[in-house]
Length: 137
Image 1 (cartoon, rainbow, N blue to C red):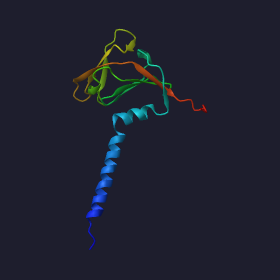
Image 2 (tube, helix red, strand yellow):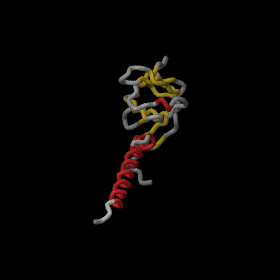
Image 3 (cartoon, rainbow, N blue to C red):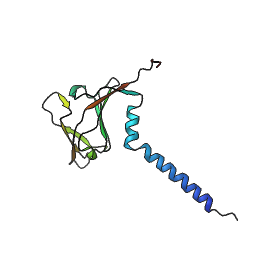
């Protein structure tokens, strides 16, 4: 009877590789890469008009993506507190102007527990627009 150990070891190695690949696909870096895929980064700006923000998305422990519609997103990598960012948290901003700026503090709330989980000091907003599909260069 053949020894099944090599076959079991091979199967375990393949399963581990699949799990590692799936975990890499969910990493914050991979999520951010997918969000900006097919887009070109522009010059960072200090403020966004609140009325232009259509939705937000948190990339765990990394960044906040602000969608302003029309194919343009802004990625904000906080100056401080990025480790508090959790997917599913609610962002609460208390601005005293019609803009959200790099000097603002955003408080984070757990959606299910309804308690504050942290805060972040925003950095500059990097715009990403869809690459021109008609360009040949």
